[in-house]
Image 1 (tube, rainbow, N blue to C red):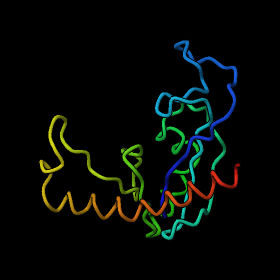
Image 2 (image 1 turned 120 degrees about the vertical axis):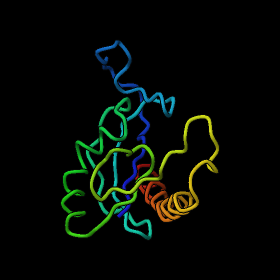
Image 3 (image 1 turned 30 degrees about the vertical axis):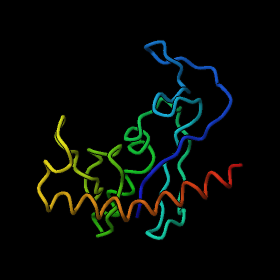
Image 4 (image 1 turned 45 degrees about the horizontal axis):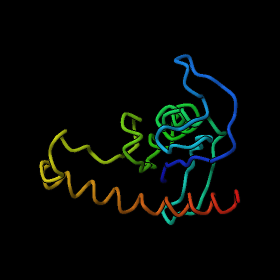
Length: 139
């Protein structure tokens, strides 16, 4: 399984967060919209799409709300999930690349860690196909 997400861009919605920032504005994407999580098969075929959270919702938070409870059960049954660094700390069975130390290059990681990161990124990249398919359907 591949866990990823996309910002569903839209016209501006009204809504204010506790800190006064716009609820539906994604700083990450510099656009208004909603944060939707999705699961894809290893070949990039979309399998499931979550409800949409406001664009200001961090990826890990949206995943905790919609996807992680089911994925943790699947992991316990032997089905791992690959995700990007936005899902660090997701828990059991969610494999994400290891971050390089701040201020260092990727070479600062041990060779086996770099190899694992490369494998995770390579397979997870197929999940981007699902994002393209979902965005095409939306339009």
